[in-house]
Each structure stands twice: as C-alpha cells, then as structure tokens.
Length: 352
Ligand code: GDP
Image (cartoon, rainbow, N blue to C red; front, side):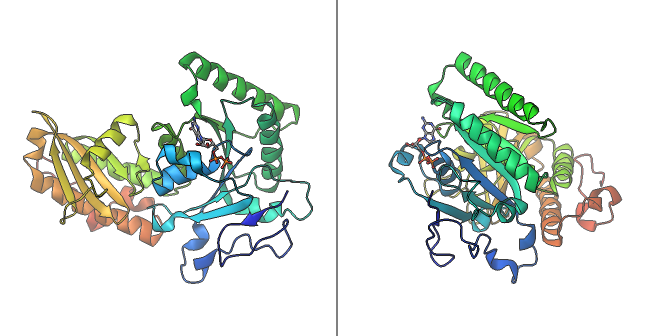
C-alpha cells in the first residue's frame, strides 16, 4: 500500500517506506531536554474502523457528527499533542493496513519508540479480518518492543445493544487471546475497552491509556489523596483543556466539567477559577493548575466556608505539581516530606 506523511515540512509524500523515511522527526528534541521522554501512541486498525475520528474528537474538539465527513487518507498523520495537553505525547494515526512484509516498512523504528499501541476494531462490522490484523500487528510489535502497552478499542459500540456489547467484548477477548496462545505469546497482555465517539467512553478509554504512560502517576495520586483528606473534598477531577479527563474520569465528571465551561469554551474567569453552587449542600470549585490542567473540587458547602484553607492547600498542590513535572518526576518527594511545598494544612489546623 502507499503510505504518506500528512505533515507538510516534516516529510514529503512517499510511495512506500523508504529507508530515508523521516519517521520520528522528534522535532524539539534538541531544544527540550524532556522530549526524549515524550511517549508515542500508535493508532492502528483496519481502514474505516474510526481511528481518525477518535483522534479528532478527543484532541481537536471535533463533534462526532462531523467525523462523517472525514476524508480517507493514505498518509500517516502524526499529531504532537504537547501544545494542547498537560501530558506530552505524540499520536501516529496509521492509514488502514500496514504491510509488515514490505521490506521498506521500518518496524524497528516505529515500535522502538512506542509507549502504547491502540488497535481499533469496528464492532459494527464483521471483525474476523480485524482480529487477524490485530494478531499480526501485536506479534510483530512485541518482538521489537515487549514494553509496549497493547490496547484494543472495541469501537462504535453505540450501535450495539447492552447484551450485544457484552457478547462482542467476550468474543473478541477470547479469540484475540486464543490467537496469542496458539503462537506461544501468552505473555502478551491485551487490554480491552468498549468505545464510541458519541459518548464519554472514548475519553475514558484514552485517559486510561495515557495514564499508564505517566511515570509520575503514583506521586500525583498521593498528592490528590492528601489534598482530598485535608480539604474535605469529596471528589477531585483533573482535566486537560482538550476535555480529556486525566484522572477519575467518568460520565458524571465530564458533565460537571462541561457545566463549568462558559460559551467560549473557557472554564475560568480572569482569576483562573470558577465556583458553582450545585444545590443546598454541594459546591463545585475549579482552579487552574497549569495552562492545560484544572483541578475541580466537589465539596460540601460547610467545607467551602474555609475557602482560604482550601486555597492554601491548592497553592501547595500546584507548586508540587510544577516541581514534579518540571524536575522530571520524583516519587520520593512525598515520602520524604522534605519539601516545604508539601506542608498542606488540615481543617483541624494541623500541618501535614
Ligand atoms: P479511519 O479510516 O480508521 O480513520 O476511520 P474514520 O475515522 O474515517 O471513520 C470511519 C467512519 O466511522 C466515519 O464515518 C465515522 O463517522 C465513523 N465512526 C467513527 N467512530 C464512530 C463511533 O464511535 N460510532 C459510530 N457509529 N461511527 C463512528
């Protein structure tokens, strides 16, 4: 098949995968010391399975209905979402089937730098061919890089009844793992997700894929837990501006976040915060952590009376987040409690 890049300036059009193919072009590598850590996520699957739609809806705010008009392409679309996401990574959207037996296909180059491989299967279609393609892709990628996370999106499930969804999930899971077992590849782990661009499921699934690629995640979760315990917040959500929820994402979370966004798509006022009283007992409090990340607290009204304390803890939290991500992630920060920024204040006045 003919494969091309869809990024003017990065590489031209190619009839195939020439040796000189500019796969990586890890552009800012020289300028940014952290760019070598930027994980790469591959989107693969049969043509028309929904790969480009997923990418456009999740990262470019395209409405699901607009994807009906997406043109099919035979180019690799390489999307660096660093400028729209808190977590830096690149997505490579592959055009339909890749011919692994084409000698010009440089699987070493492609799979070596890959953190996650998402394989999209159209659940509304006959998936026999997709399953054999999945097997071929996974076994080839695993041989090159056994550290890749293999993620299978059983996609377009909006057209399926609940029973049908469960059955399709079970069947695909079974067959894909049987194929791996037959090839003595039992140690390859596949994760499965039921997804659709017409509801929150695609955001939730992508969020889980990305979370696995964040080395600082345990530290971040610790920070969130401390924040929750000292600020008497019942639930905290963190979001990127692209509306991809990074943590604790669920339908309720997305609903709240969208509730807090005004018509212009901006969730904050000029002081980078927003407050909404939901009912007599609950308050939503949103504050900007970084340009791409917001912290949304859902808390009881009486806790919100001590807003100064919550703001103080938020200040500590934000400082710690900046340190963790700018310095490159130090999971010992919390356990050692040696950093002044981690002196959260509890409602009872004690300092943690
Ligand atoms: P690609 O060739 O894998 O990139 O597939 P596209 O992204 O071009 O999508 C092919 C078709 O599937 C388009 O008409 C999309 O609107 C449709 N599609 C994508 N995702 C979904 C989904 O979750 N549900 C439904 N019903 N259709 C979808």
